[in-house]
Length: 354
Image (cartoon, rainbow, N blue to C red; front, side):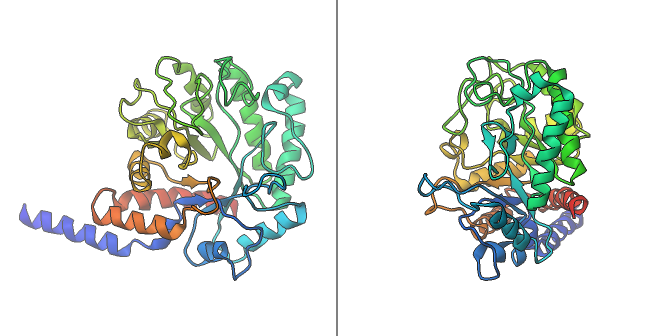
């Protein structure tokens, strides 16, 4: 028995020694302030030398001071994505491009919101999303954090229903239009992300601002689009909503019960699991940065998203995230195997995109 314990300890030490900082960095997508990515910039160095998994881009708002941050015109955006990919480390270049209220690239065309798309029919949807995918592909985007799989169940919902971000309350209708969206993105080699698991359409609160409890509002039917599309979408984004019926301790994005037990094992999703922005008030007000990383990894999150929109003076860097993750490994609060397995899923996705 003693020999076996020593062997396990040695194996663990070898794994830790072989774990590269780049493998840790690969588990993060960050937002950044800046409109260029030449070899002298930090973001270029983060991707090309430190192995940052990807970036999320935002159109620069000329009116809102201090807003994120990355492009003002088509040429600027295309040059930026080209430079981000120039060192051939296969970064994920992401945007939130749903159409309607959530459309981060508004340089060429304004796309309709989901609720209007559903009223216009399938052919209309195919045409709109074909145009969207073609534009994103031209601009160098390879990951779209869309479509929304939330059901419009609560007319008082402030984040989904209010803005028409859902295709409706019927899970079969939502599945149908989500599938069209996904198929059109795939025609141009753009990965998709169903959101916001396990369902945000019944909620009252806004997780951007603070704690949102859906225990008495959420319904099992909200899982149906995810079950229907588990083999179609590339990634699934997990919301920060709290539901004590699913986990009495943690919000979904930090919950092993929700992510590993429900999404990974029960539903059978084999793709990449992404957290919603880990700087949102629902969890940032309740958990330290180190605790958010620890809980995310242990819950089964593959990619941790930090959009870095809060304040240009308090940007969370990949250096800090690597340092925190190394500390957690040393303290044995997370495992090397979790990081290795996440990297395998992330790299499989990247391989398909490049």
